[in-house]
Image (tube, rainbow, N blue to C red; front, side, top):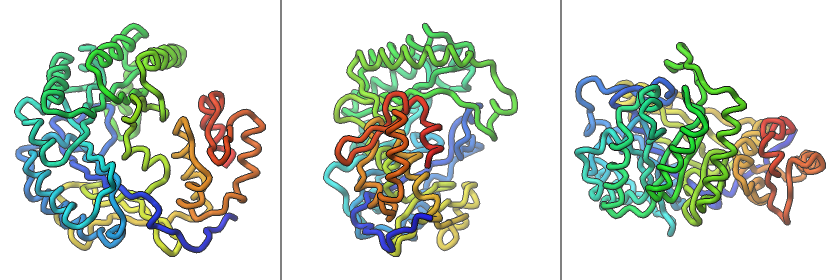
Length: 386
């Protein structure tokens, strides 16, 4: 069995913060995230108070380390005002330092921006926006339970531009009910005309604990989905977008810093109802945390009892956990990153790496290891080697 080296130099491991806002206007039938449709008013001020307490409680885990990024996800974070984020982000800034290329991303839903001042969000420190469009086809939007129209999505993106954001992402899905190749490419072309610097383009999957799982829609055949994926990749590449992760495409310099930290097995602190975290400990242990899930219970639990669960990752699981993330990246990982972020010796996995290279699934250039195109298309088989 592979054993950790005994200690982790956690000061070298990047750390991010994830903030979860659990409310949305309407629960989408495909969504398995911890999100709850608004019933009456949102206790916004009380929730921010709780987030601050939650953050302070986790602060000893990472206080001496600069923060690389903050991601505000949900739910629908744009239901909260800029004033609330000003209070929260100002508190965080008073307790920690930030890296030079610090990134703060907020997810927004086009159906919630009508009365929001986007410039105010930028002024409080949010410098990247991720817009959950999912599709520009009205039939697809209806089947997905989205609360916005295609034209409302375009108006929302225009307001983001006007507010001065030069970094924003458009979320799109493919393989949707009744979707054909032309529909999917029309979505991408419409998104490209809006000139985002990043597009997250991912296949709809049916997850447990969703309405779609209980009442599955009719989806395109897997051959059609593969054809869509191939054609979409070509279109994105032709328009200057580089694929750097399974579902992520970016213009040069605009890859998501926060998500890259996840995929390279960096640390992240999760605050908010149901938020997950991963924290490396100096003694060589890696701790996963999960906060109390239901918003009302979470606001009662903090402080002191915010962790609904926490567990140490056994050393035997560290390699597969690292690889499940890092090999999603087109450019893979550096050997030093594996050793640094798991505490494991590279010699323990070297025979497996060589086997995968011999099969044509992995490639190595100096200390960088990544999937070949064939390995990338057979990622589950590659991971099974570990």
